[in-house]
Image (cartoon, rainbow, N blue to C red; front, side, top):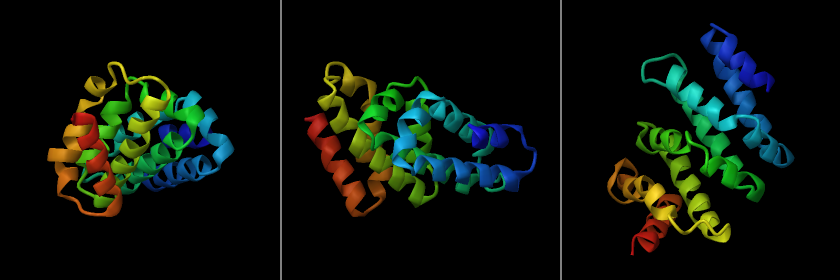
Amino acid sequence: EEAMRIAKSTSNDTTRQHATRFFFNMSYIRHNRAAFASKGAVDFMHHVIKNFGAPGQPHATAMVLHMAKTMVQLVCVPDAVSTVAEHPKFMECWNVFSMHDDQQVRLRAAKILNKVLPASNAMGLNYGFVPKYAPMLLAVTSGKLSRDDNATISTAKSTAQTYMS
């Protein structure tokens, strides 16, 4: 919570970037993740992306990458994946990640897809799930992500094809 407060309140771009890095570092601790999800992590990610993640802003790519890495950490935990994936701002954040100019950010979007789609079936959310997350499937099969090539993105493409058939 302190990292979120600092990042939102400071006018110093370097301090804000360090706060977002600290936020990610704290999400790396497995037992923190479910609490992160319930204490407004997705709202914070959205805030950072919208207010400080635009190209040309100081440290924008680093901050968006920290938010994408944090989301990956959160969706890796069964107790947090539904909280994150069902959040009203989840898709907006994920779309920013999937269309970002930085390939490392897009790679995190693929990792998120690889966790969220299978988790949805395990949680019994498959009814109505594909339409809600259809932009994820389209982004990985025909968007900027579709032009990237590595094992994680290949898995995401294969997962998307499975859900689209």
